[in-house]
Length: 114
Image (tube, rainbow, N blue to C red; front, side):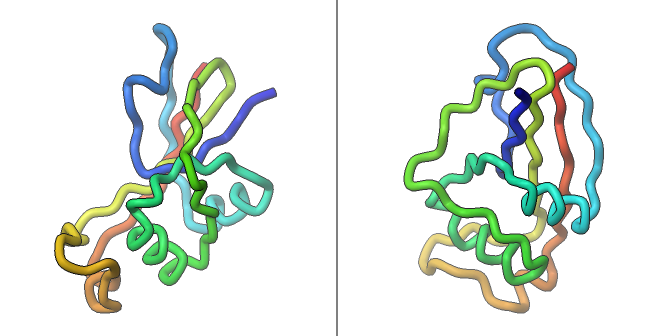
């Protein structure tokens, strides 16, 4: 059975062997639907501020696992990735201001192994 993960990045270590990957841009509505049907979160708890920004801006609620799972994408598996541009690195605080979130650009894409 295929697994759909949700995270903020792709890593080479997610792929156990040579494969073909397709990428598809997703709407917020499509992501909400996928999340409501169940995804396996592979979010890092240290990115809580970004996760909260996603919740506040889009109403997408993906739980933060205490320990992210080891992702091993095989044929049919997918990972939904939220890419963010424009949010500053948090070095002296733990959340973003509403103004910072409003200025940022968010994009969702799904990568599927075939």
